[in-house]
Image 1 (tube, helix red, strand yellow):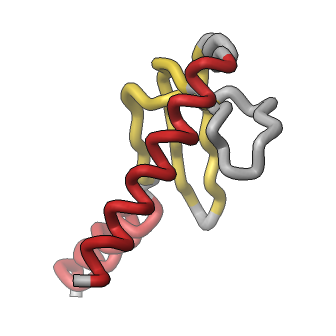
Image 2 (image 1 turned 180 degrees about the horizontal axis):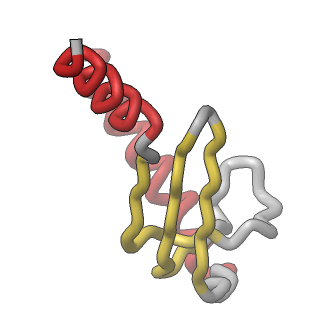
Length: 93
């Protein structure tokens, strides 16, 4: 009986143990204006997350990446158009 009680307590303690995660991540610039996200930029950041009793708390810290220049935006749009044309050509074969 004492052994069964110890097993139940051990199982309960494992059930209430929080899940957590931390490490490096990417931070996105959130003031993009284009619907295709060609003007988004990202940079390095750090994150910490914890889940416990059904609650999830996540904190991400990082510097705001610089805005993408018009030349970078145009090159991304051109690359996406070329990529879409290549995929269309592959499926047409």
